[in-house]
Length: 381
Image: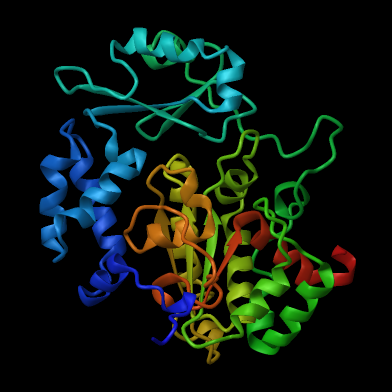
């Protein structure tokens, strides 16, 4: 027998979806549309969604039962209340009971008339002002959370603090320094080289800010500028007390996109994808708006700033899964599968999204790259 290497491991879902035109995002978006406004279980509506894209029922039932946003019943008014560590600690979890009482519905259920549904999520990025909830896409936060949702208290949703208690900034860039975005990319793409970007990031010692701390330059090098390389910006933060990604995506989406563009340039990638967790609706809207503006301004497209560089960028929403923030699980989710971590090797840089070399960097990591290129890697180090 000829031994089969890890890169040749057979993935039945990926193989079948590949034959059906890779309907991953289309499948996921169709599932989200089918779920909206219904309290029925996935078994009643997911199989039809799968049939529409030429996949068996299991291909839709898998993700529909896995992602919290698809598995949870959705009434005409859908409220997501944070049950994460920071929000739970704010009132010892009593806010959950109070919200259930005020809305007249239990967590994980919908009212009998289908009017209101309540879903517990594990982070809304309001760790500094919890407890928090989303009423549709509208955030509420603070001690009187239940009263806000009932309409008896004024809505509160404090902005994210961009400095610590000493007044020192906690992030570089325009959030605190007022620097304009898109000052680096136009110059680099017209007069610079991928090797120059790679060298400066290597000199900076920049490591992944999503938690793993892996050297960014090493990950970029591993992709080896292979044809079809993809760069993914991971905006699926969800650890207690972590809301830097939300701050950047809501306040400085352009800096995130500029960092993504520079990463794609260094890696020889012609495609970039930003994954924004569904629990961050404002971040999702701001990122999409910023991408549209970037296309209008010539930063993205077939001929970026009249050069031979082509770069296509899209923003996609997550489905409510903490695990899907892990890079191989994130890739699985983009393919329309359940967001489960895949065995490694193969590593994404060699065999990632639909088998293509894939570089996954955290949003905060990418937002650091323009600063590094503008001032030099040694200065950052």
